[in-house]
Structure formats: C-alpha cells, structure tokens
Image (cartoon, helix red, strand yellow):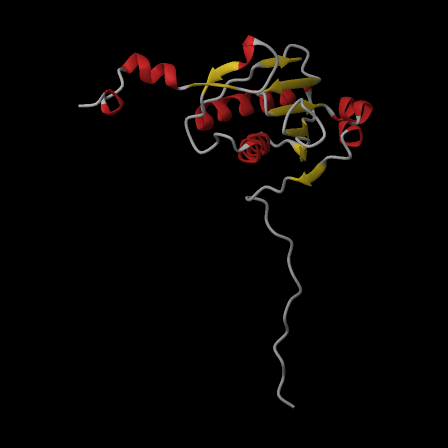
Length: 170
C-alpha cells in the first residue's frame, strides 16, 4: 500500500483537526469546527443569534463587517434587560457554539460585570449589552456602514396578513 493510501494514526488525525483561526498571534489556533460551520461565518453568526434568542435577548442584529474591518466577518449585537440576563445570554452563546460548532471563544470580556459581555470567536464577535450600555456605545451606528440585518426568531408568530373575504356571487 502506498504511503498516501495508508490510514492515519489517531495522533495524526487529531493533529490534522487543528486549523488557524483569524486573529492576532499564536493564540489564534484552535480546534476545527465539528460541523457545517467551517468557513461559514454567517452560519456561525446565525447560530449565535439563535442562542441569544433562546435566552430572550432583545433586538438581535447581525452586522457583516468582513469588507470594512479585519477584526471579524460578523458581529452579533443584542440586549439583555438585566445584568443576570446578559450573562445568561452570553453563556447560552458559548454553550451553543461549543456544542453545535465545536468552538470556544478566543477571548471573553465583561462576564463578571454583566453590563457588556464580548465573546470573540475570531471571525465572529458577539456583543451582549444592557440597554443603557448599548445606547451609550451605539455600536450599530459606529458600524453603520456594514450590512445590517435584524434577527427574527423562527419561533416568533408571523404577523397576520390581510384577511381574504369570500366573494359573494352577484
């Protein structure tokens, strides 16, 4: 059997699962995503938005910044109404991205204070803020030249459309 056709050892397989994740310096190496999220930062952002929604986050927005910044491809910005809810939303995002995509944040900030939690996944940065912090820092305006979209929960009932009235024969 040719060497190229030989099965990989378990240690070689484990080593091949490491990929470079965008970010500064050597700390930017992490485990490869375990599912369909490899190279798809939008799918990762939607997964994060869904995790925010699971904890009743308010005004969840996705901002595509890949063409205007080297910081990340996407931001997810949302609000929690209390510091406890902000921390719960951030935990939900961490748990969901670890479970569904095999990803852990490269950095996290603000967890102890709970007014603004930042989770940095390299190509995705998640901001969870109280309404006061969000209003003060106004990240949506700062990154206003990025493509923005409002996340609508798939579980949210759709708005009723116009009701059709049966036509009466004349």
